[in-house]
Length: 111
Image (cartoon, rainbow, N blue to C red):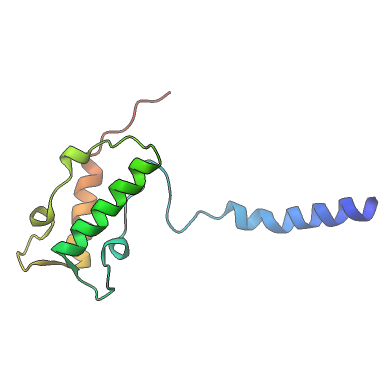
């Protein structure tokens, strides 16, 4: 009995540092997608079709999970993100849009 408790306690202590580490990507209602989430073929650029496909997939997943679609009407389209007009998004354009979009998001009321 003592040995079982000791082994369980040791396992718990060893697991605590891993559990305390923040995840690489915060999940939850306010999580923002990454460039890689939209770059479907991994070539370092996001085409308009990749943008549409990734956004549609994200919306469908969130709807399936029963999440409220806050801010969807304010989300920009591809042309809003493609600031240099070259028909593809660079990581810099994507990050700049994410920063602008994140700043414009309403904070949910405190409960």
